[in-house]
Image (tube, helix red, strand yellow):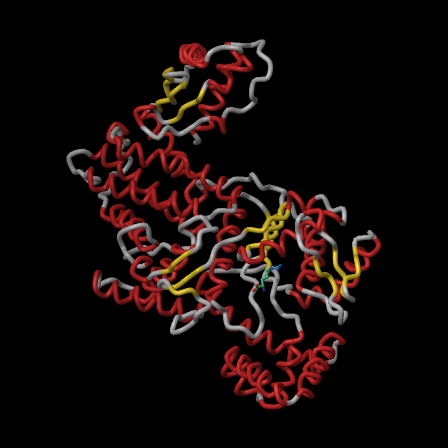
Amino acid sequence: MDSRRDIANTLLNTLRDCWPDAQGLPDDLYGALEVPPDKTLGDYAFPCFRLSRALRMAPAQIAATLAQRYDQPALARAEAVNGYLNFFLNRGNFAEQTLSAILRAGDRWGASDLGQGKTVCLDYSSINIAKRFHIGHLSTTVIGNSLKRIYDFLGYRTVSINHLGDWGTQFGKMIAAYRHWGDRETVERGGVDEMTKLYVRFGQEAANNPALEEEGRAWFKKIEDGDPEALEIFHWFKDVTLKDAMRVYDILGVKFDSYAGESFYADKTGAVVQELADKGLLQDSDGAKVVNLEAYDMPPCLIIKSDGATLYQTRDLAAALYRKKTYHFDRNLYVVAYQQDLHFRQLFKVLELMGYDWAKDQCKHVSFGMVSFEGESLSTRKGVMVYLDELLARAKEKALDIINEKSPNLPDKEEVARQVGVGAVVYATLQNNRIKDIDFRWDQALNFDGDTGPYVQYTCARCGSVLRKAPDLGDTAPDYAALDNDEAQQLLLLLSRFPDVVRDAADKYEPSMITRATTDIAKAYNKFYYEHRVLDDADPAGTQARLRLTAAARSVIRTGLWLIGVEAPERM
Ligand code: ARG
């Protein structure tokens, strides 16, 4: 049940009853209902000045009229104060309805079919071949994964795409280097690190031997031309890189529907360039071809270099068109760091100039800030751990230390440590608005007390433990009067609003809204838990109500954690 929705509907009917002839009234009041900062002002409030124009009446008078007519005692009563209509939920009834609805929905509380028939493409993680999975790719991976889960939950069809960075002359150089100094076994064993070494060596040797550069170019040309030997090595480089990345994806629970990366579009750029030319958008610029974007306050968008090579951008143009044609998306999201802001503004503008209106309102760069580590920016790299697999392994170790100290007798300690360690990292990444820079600190992220993953996970496990300890109350009817207190009511309110939060998070591409809401629920549960004895032998009916509240809290916290990509251990 959604009390806000119900109040909005009843209020709208009341409004129409009071002024049947009024013109220009809103046809939905859901968005207009506010949540007052102070509980003495009610659980929801409607500012009546919004109607004064349409009704030609003072807000206070509108509020008074509506208050008199609003009649829905089972849900809420309305009070007029200073031009506001304040709604106070009927507590017992609110508790009963909220809990029944949540427990009936189970892990689908907040889910909907809002997105039915609509498709969202999500481009995230999008790592580069022959490079280690760098912590710079943590945010995109984790934000993208969460958005995918959120959209799935809302009934959209999602297409998650790992737009691999697997095209460019560097791959020709790497093949040349491999043919000179590499061997299969070493690369197999050393993985991406070994490829990097080869690449670095190529740079050093090429400084004294210009013929090498030529060789590198020739190998890239061979990749482009589909030479079997070149392709075999190139694909093998990709496999080795992806094998490393898969380990990280498995740990994080991240999945992709497509790994079509830049190379996939290499043979599709010709058509794009032709189309740009046909539409009169291409200009010559010192031998290169560009789209002039001066009128939009942007530097020219480079499409073809003077040596004839295409660019990252050219392939992104081809990719956007391909995604539209293949998936018929309603939204096309790019979860990429804000450094690429100009790249995406140019991309969307060029698509728009090509006549694709969808570029404007369906394509979106979901950008995010930088990650630093214990105060050190990652570019310095001195002694800072930057690789994702190492980071996650370290997180698990540290979590294990804490668990050994706090609950040495816990079964499955290793497994719980993994869930807590990884959860701490993911939570910290999704804790604040994505555009904010993040400074990751171990002490903070792994604190069991505070706005952290482990704290929320711990609260969820606590709910589980309360439920396990509960006596069998059979079908004792719950006495909801036991929840007529501020702590329980606050918790209920947060639980009832969770579906709104999920929708908002989807609209704003902001998983942090779910992180915050879930944390608030955990805090509210703990407050309730400390103030009220849940299990009281003398009061089975009250106990039943408190247990239902506990079960609902646990269920919604689990869902919230799942939506941000964090697991919830049974016990901690
Ligand atoms: N591989 C790129 C990088 O690591 C990100 C690609 C993002 N996706 C895209 N369609 N451009 O910076």
